[in-house]
Image 1: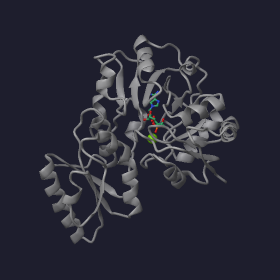
Image 2 (image 1 turned 45 degrees about the vertical axis):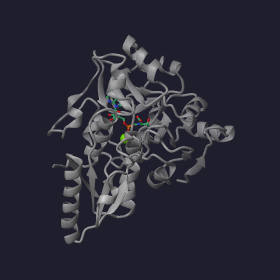
Image 3 (image 1 turned 90 degrees about the horizontal axis):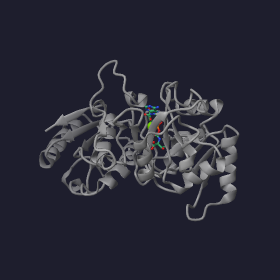
Image 4 (image 1 turned 135 degrees about the vertical axis):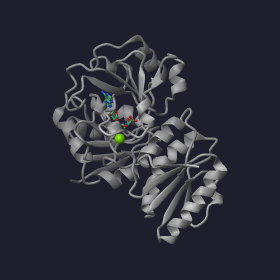
Length: 350
Ligand code: TXA
Ligand code: MG
């Protein structure tokens, strides 16, 4: 398939291009587009045939439900049965933004979109490009991350092209995703609401709305055999580069020493090693390709650069990636959740 690639300017949106993209969605086609979390692979959420194509293009398991994106607050009304008070407050406070709310769906949403579940995840993205595409299409857009299933999610157009060129109708660029990790998913079908995936809207922020909101304990731990998570997608191998990832966790000076020690053993085996470091530590390593995620004092930059850095190590064909760990508070919870999954929970405590 010929894939059209276009870049939009969010300060001066090209109406002609928007119309072209909207037409692809109306014609049941697939469009990769930017959002502030990661790029999404979108189709008309209300059309079974269109949504089925998303699963095929990504190689996504059929039992993994999609998130439905809306362009404005009113867009949620026909999609869900009832909106509890706490969900209303969360929406008003954090939308548009990196938060997905799970609610009971109406029959307007086909079963393929929700992978047979009675509930559906809804999100209103902050990205102006994303919201304008949804508005131009005139329908809600189902969009998982725009990567081949299992790979780190794309945060810029180049990575979408890498994974999806030739497989979908349209790839739109125009911004680098500023959060860099997928939205916080909060299940509002239960009381109190429960976080199923940590993201840019942190637990601390959510607790300002309802202090009883909690994070599903299972999600930070290595899943046990036959484990059935509440967000079906969380059971799959995810965010994984081609190289294997190991996390070294503990006091920073000990971490640096341990990483240097491990590098040496891999070099002796003739392997190429990548180190995921930080501004504070990057000059302390030897014998490996070192990439800094940013300063430890700025978790936003660590989260923003995480997936791109995992992919950059693959570009450099390293065999193994050794990563420093981050404290599991605030946005650090989302960062460590993705890092642990990309490492298959391979963690060395020092
Ligand atoms: O930031 C994001 O949310 C991005 C951008 C494109 O908006 N999208 C995204 O979609 O991350 P995806 O498909 O990669 O992740 C969707 C996650 C999966 O883990 C899925 O299991 C969960 O949402 N999910 C969707 N609907 C659900 C539901 N009804 N109940 C529980 N989990 C659900
Ligand atoms: Mg994904």
